Amino acid sequence: MDRVLSRALAWNGPLVTSLALTLAFLAGLLLIRLTPVGGVLFVGLAVGGVATVIEPLAGLAAALFLGPLWAYLRAEVPQVPAQIAQVFVALALAVWLAQGLARRKFRIPRSPLLLPLLIFLGTALVSLWNAVELPVYGVPELIKWVQILLLFLFVSDRLTPRHLPWLFGVLLVTGLFQASVGMWQFGLRGEGPEHFAILVLGERFYRAYGTFEQPNPYAGYVGMMLSLAVGMVIEMIRGKVTRRQGDKETFPLSLSPCPRVSMSSCLPVLLPVSIALGAALLMSWSRGAWLGFGAAVTVMVVALPRRTRWGLLLVAVIVVGGLGLYATGLLPAPVVARLTDFAQDVRFEDVRGVGINDANYAIIERLAHWQAALEMFRYNLWTGVGFGCYEPAYRDFALINWPIALGHAHNYYLNIAAETGIIGLAAYLLLWGAVFWQTWRVTRCAEGLLRGVAIGLLGTWTHLAVHHFLDNLYVNNVHLYIGVLLGLLAFAIERTRVAGQQRTETYDR
Image 1 (cartoon, rainbow, N blue to C red):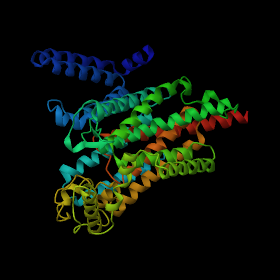
Image 2: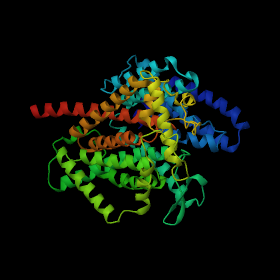
Image 3: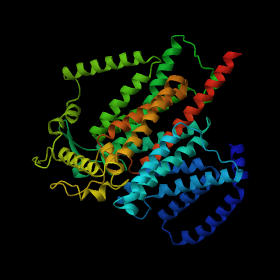
Image 4: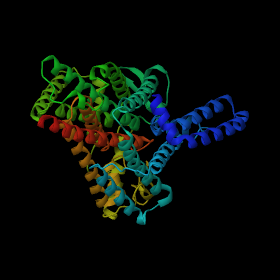
């Protein structure tokens, strides 16, 4: 640790000194006028800023923890800047760029994901040529994806095997924090927003929503973190079973992506975190997230065995078992009702003349926004109404009973088609097709901890893809996590490639 600190100070010594003197001067002025809480907040931000200048990954950690607090800070703590996470993102990226320029060696990672990302960004930019509301809606949405690209490059460049456990620690701590808040909201707080109230087995509870202020995006975030953790857990269990059966590893231990961290040492940490995240996901009462996580588990089970046919057989066994539990009435009735009671109101027809009541309101409202998105897509077939501009364009396509826009179409594929047209939708599908393919390839080639990461990422992308049929998860700074996880995938791809080359050289000898 001392060596890392001294090296960081050697690169950033003058910058750290100047920043420290400036902060000391400002602290003397501001602490006199700030309340105790404000003073603590200021000192915390100052320490975080100095840590980020020394090591940019510290700023990334702060951004990942503070990012999901945006909606909560905006609603409950207006005296604190809601987008405080963006300060750390900007500082971390600025220090990373400055370090590269100071070394006169700025490396752009060569990743198969870079070109699809740039293509999608290009189509989004083209769609803004005739955008409905460019400054207010189009530019912020474009900035999100620029941040995803920059964080992808940043993590691809900065992440090393030594940093891998640290990054997982940040992701797990943040996920555990959000899960704890959700569990408290569900059953321990005793009261909550009336529109989140639910009856479970005759008892009154409140849907978990964490610091997202909405259960569905909260559940989407929890489901993605849970998929990542579960993917690693099931690979660790598979590894334990394989070793007990006496099978030898075909991958030399020295080529492990993180030789100092054993799979066995991670399991006692990941297992309780996975249980907490699973409980929070259930307590969110979000159909989209439940369906997304179910699909994620299915795909991860397929990827778990080395031979895909055994994975498909295992999925078939699980499906038959689930159908048996459903047929015998052993599945929890409230969960089954939640997953099935909406089917009677789903229709693929014009919903302008459909009667509205308390039971079908949420479903018909979502279908009305889907219909409006389709009308936008038909009207602007090639380039759409402008990236991020669904909400301002909605007033021209709204159904008569649904004049108020929800901010997005509650189906990201329809949303992206309406905003960027058929060109943008094709580029978006190309991007995620490339992401899925590259992740699948890593699950076939990697070993140990790195394979667990790849299986978890495969589940995360699946959850995101399925949940996006019913919602938009690029909200409340969740896009920061997408950029980081894409960077983690790029790291896994590169480590697998290098390890494969080393393995070939070893066997050739």
